[in-house]
Length: 207
View (spheres, rainbow, N blue to C red):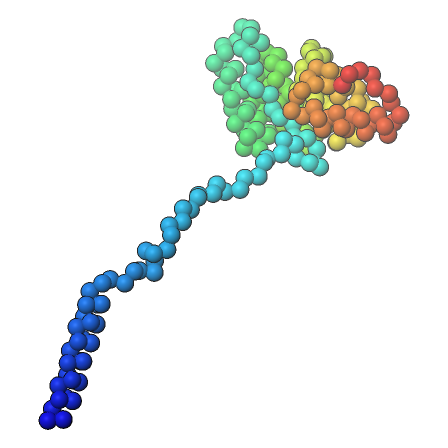
C-alpha cells in the first residue's frame, strides 16, 4: 500500500504542475519591442552651404546685364534685336564667347545698346583679351558715364588684369557713388581702401 500511495501522490503532483504550466502558457508574454516606448523621429533637412556672392579671393565675376530696355531700340524690328540678344546670352551661358560676340556685333551694327556692348566686353575678357574688354566698356561710358555695370566691370579689368590700380580707383569711386548698395559694393569698397592706403590717396567722396 505504501508504494501505491507514493505513486498516487507523485502522479497528482505531475498533473497539477502540468495544469499550472498550461494555464500560464495561455497568457501572452509581453513583446520586448511593443513594450518599448515609441520614439518619434524628426526628419532633418540636409545641410546647406551658403553660396558666396563673390568668389574670393578670385577676381569678381563680371555679371552680364539684363536684356536691353526696348526703349533703347529706336527703329529696327525689336523681334530681330531680341532674338540676337537672346542668342548672345545663350552662347555666353554655354561659354561660347566667340559665338556670343558675333551675335552682339550684329546687334551693335544696327543700333547702340549699352547692355549688349557691356556683355560683349565681358566675353572678350573671358576669352583672355582684357584690352578689348576695356575698349568696349569705355565706349559705353563715353555715351553713358553713369552706367553702373560698365563702371564696375571696367574697374575689375583695370585692377585685376591690367594692374592699373589708379585708373581702377577712379572708376570704382564713381561706381560706389552710383551704387553704394550694389551686391558687389562691399568687395569693391575693400579694394578701393587698399588702393588708397597703398598709394597714399585720400578719399574723394562718400564711397
